[in-house]
Length: 237
Image (cartoon, rainbow, N blue to C red; front, side):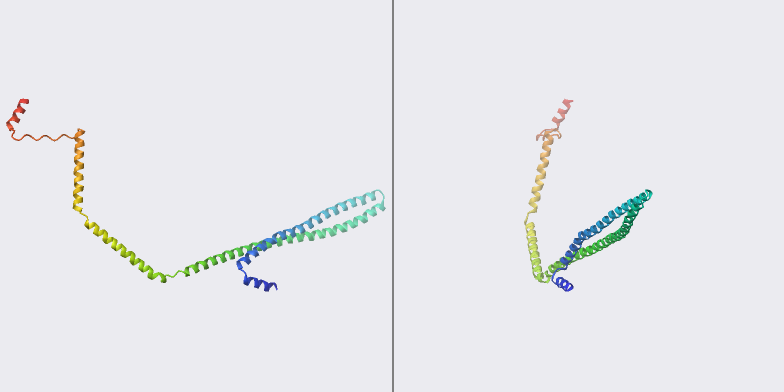
């Protein structure tokens, strides 16, 4: 019935959820196992205390038997010897039980160690499987999305838009060429040259004002004779 129920559950539920539940179940078993091991350990502790008590009683009764013999009281020594015998038998039984309890405790620790190792292995396998399942789901979503993209369906629109963009680009390029051809480049060059000449004249004017350049000599009057000019030069000498 459990196998059938497990098959039924696995057929209707998500394997990822089942693996996660398995990991939780494994983790839940650890406190229960620790509790059981604690009970076994407590039994060992109890038997160890009883063993120590029996040993003390055996030593005490042994001393009393010897003391009775030394005191000449064989009757008391016999009574103590009888009790001593019973304590020794109880001690022997206790030691057997203690040995068995210690073996059970060691076995419980070994079982826990093996369980923790198997738990770690199964947990790791489950986590890897869960990550793989999630990755598979994501890949399925990506595949569904990619399958919804159809390149063939947009070919006509794509080509048409490219053609329109190219037409607009050609028209604008032609308009730009026509606009450039209609501009009077000669007039623009003349204006540029005139601006340069004007700028040069302004620079010369500033230099003359700053004393960095001599003023141009005045033009001599029309009709002045060379003799006057020579005479002036001689008189100055």
